[in-house]
Image (tube, rainbow, N blue to C red; front, top):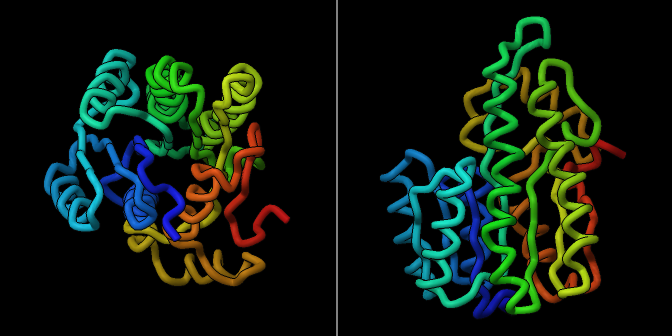
Length: 248
């Protein structure tokens, strides 16, 4: 059963990792996919080809969600190419970890700009279209770190906690127009980035998770399918922890 048949989704930061996993699963469920990437041109082109081979329409856009103007242009381009914007997934994000005493101002500002301001930019960019349609699902990618904090990640935790507050406020503002806003807070998800970590560290992390494994991008993508589809038509303003029980 294809739960997203005929819907158009914008997914930011999708050339690899969780974003790529979401794009692939959404295409499997019949969604047309507009995705953004920052610099990985070859990876983006390969993903675009793979998604189109699934029988849906997919276009990759080199666009910086942290830029207000680029976000506006992206929404205009996607609307022109696809005819609607039904789902927005704000997934683009970076880390610049350090203890607070060693963290430079630029490392704080950049993480807030890319992780949090991008959510404002993209939500503003699609809002008018979703209001006209009188429907839409906005899914913002936070983190367990945004829920519970983490030493060495004050900037990242602040950005991801901010996403939760922003999303709840949007849910309250736009609910009367049938536009839903929810958050997914992934735990330890195993991607290309975590593959570079040493195995001893990864094993200790897995051991501390009740389900005794790291998550996959597909685990996060399946939660996104639920929140993007009509299965969750009465769900808004919520944070869904996809973390194997880490926060239990």
